[in-house]
Image (cartoon, rainbow, N blue to C red; front, side, top):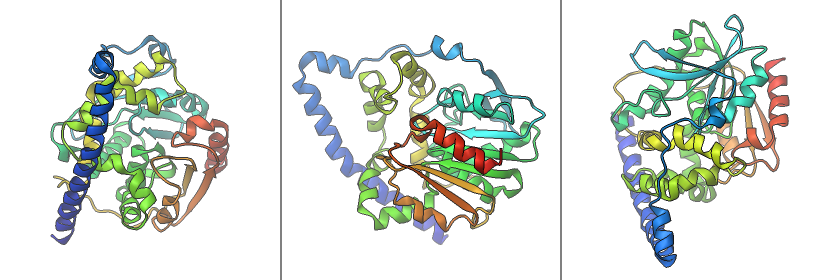
Length: 337
C-alpha cells in the first residue's frame, strides 16, 4: 500500500510540473507560430500521409514477421541471421523504430539470430488501450514472452533509451532468460527518479517527461509541422528516411507517449523481481546527451553487480549512430566475440 501511495504522490507531482511546463511551452509555440503569419500557421497544422512504409525502408534486406505471445499480444518484428545461433534481442527507444538498427542487425547476424520487435504501441505491433497497459511490468513481460515464443531459453539484450529502461528491468524480473545486457544512454528508472530529486541539471533536461503527463498537448506539439520533432531528433537522416519514423512512430504517437504516462499507474499483473542486475552489463553513454545527462551513470552503478561503463566523448543521445565503430568495438569485447 505504501508503495502505491508513493506512486500516486509522485504521479501528481509529475503532473503538476507538467502543467507548469505546458504553461511555458504552449504560449511560446503559439506566439512563434502567429508571428510567422498565415504561412507558419498553415505549416503548423500540416500533416502528410504516412500510412505506407517508405521505399527506402521496404528495400532494406531484413526479414519481417509477426509473433503472438502467451498473453495474446501480437508483435511485428524484423530479424536477421540463422535461428540455430544464440538469440540477440534489440529494444528500441522513443521516438525510434527498427530502421535505426538495420546496420547493427547486419553487423551481428553472422554470430546471432538478431531480432528487433516493435514494442507495444509502435508500428504494426499491438496497441492496447489504456495508459496502465504501458506500465513497466507489461513492457518487461512482453520481452520475456517474446523470448519464450521464439523458442529460446535465454537472450542477449541490446537496448537504447526506453528500450534500455526496459532492459534494466528484464534481468531483475526474469534472470533465467537473460545472458548479457548492453544498454545505451538509458538509466534504470529508479535511478532517474532519485537523480531528478537531487540534480537540477537533469531535472531541467527532463522537462519533456513532465510535459508528457498532460493529455492532448504533447500529441498536438509532436504532430505539428508534419511531425517536425521527429526530423529534429534524427538530423543525420534524409527526408525519406525521416518518413520511416513518421510511419512507424508518428501515426500512432499517443501510444508511445503513454510509456511516460504509464510510469505511475497501477498494473494488473504482479511480478517479483531482484534488487540488482547480476548478469554482465555494458553501459555505453554518449556524454553530450541533451536529454539524459552523464551524471546519471553513477546513480546506475548500485543497480548492477557486474557492470562496465563506456563513456563515448562527443556522442549525443544517439550514440550508436554518432560513433558506430566505438560501439561495435566495445560490444565485441564485452560479448567476447
